[in-house]
Image 1 (cartoon, rainbow, N blue to C red):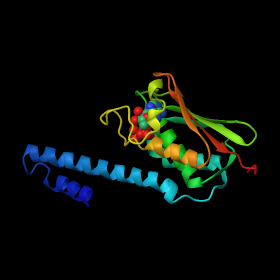
Image 2 (image 1 turned 30 degrees about the vertical axis):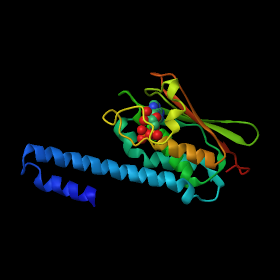
Image 3 (image 1 turned 90 degrees about the vertical axis):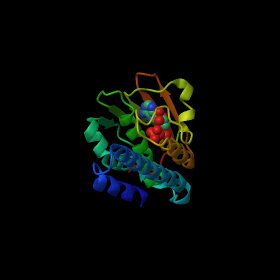
Image 4 (image 1 turned 45 degrees about the vertical axis):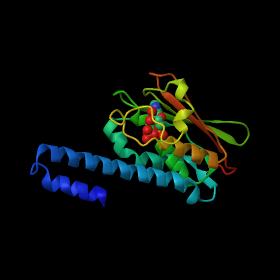
Length: 207
Ligand code: ADP
């Protein structure tokens, strides 16, 4: 309601009041849409546990492809090149796996300094029944002092004028991976991109 009505005010009255009023309405529109985004992200975070589905044999390839579909706007706008190794069957909640890929690939595309984003998703066996996934980008990178901190709620390293966001995306990723019995970490050389890695349990089914 707040977002729709401030937008309506802005559409109907822009230029008809004074310039201060136009500015105040613009702040209200911006604030309301950020509040909406924040509530949506908090709901997504909370639903990782409250709407959890059973962990079943799931194609991580199909989940990844769906995440790419969901990100097609961002991929087209940025000209990003997203590639992947063939990805295995895992034991997972498919919706959460899509969300995980979507957040990590979305960040890989967003945290860039103007170049063409290149993102590669790969996987290697980690022991007998585990897989170690990597999402590697060529973006701005992350200072090692923040490697732990960025997985915390509301933790952001940039002002919202530089990069939009709520600081909840990686907290969602951590909650999803831990619910699946895995771990998520990051490695990076600032200026040379980042690699996020997470583990998942492999399925006994091959496809
Ligand atoms: P948001 O993107 O909404 O700020 P996230 O929880 O997804 O929140 O990320 C937290 C912070 O971690 C970001 O603000 C950014 O500073 C940093 N970050 C996340 N992914 C990357 C990445 N691929 N490259 C560089 N920095 C990243």
